[in-house]
Image 1 (cartoon, rainbow, N blue to C red):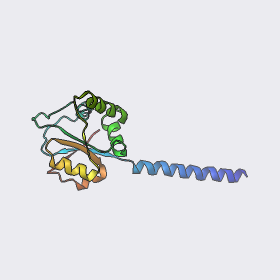
Image 2 (tube, one colour):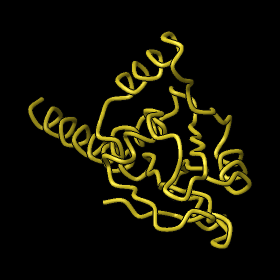
Image 3 (cartoon, rainbow, N blue to C red):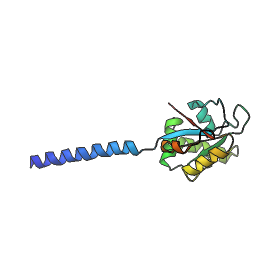
Image 4 (cartoon, helix red, strand yellow):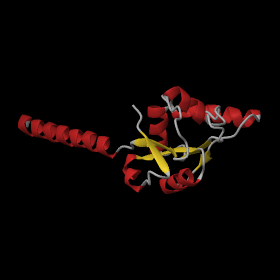
Length: 150
């Protein structure tokens, strides 16, 4: 009986370890992208928070800021908000709701897919967004800039 329990526990440990490793490999890894027409832009965490909180309305060259996001319930969106903006997704939602309900602003434009995000950022001057790192090979560097974020 003890040997059977030990084997069962060791199998359970192997299964759990495999699931943990697999979930780490399959989790969303966002990369920040912006229209290639933008040059020398500040994309520090503080600046990104202002951009995604819809507080920054134009870039330093005068081009209007166009913010694109994925759906709020998207794993990639939630990871982006936590990793790049250093806040919880519900906190960003609250900022957007406050803008809308006070009549002082609007929410970012939401795209239905990462492919649409790439297209919007590629074709819209001043656009900023994010995609999964697996999409990097689909990006034309003359049209979209990928930003490494620490």
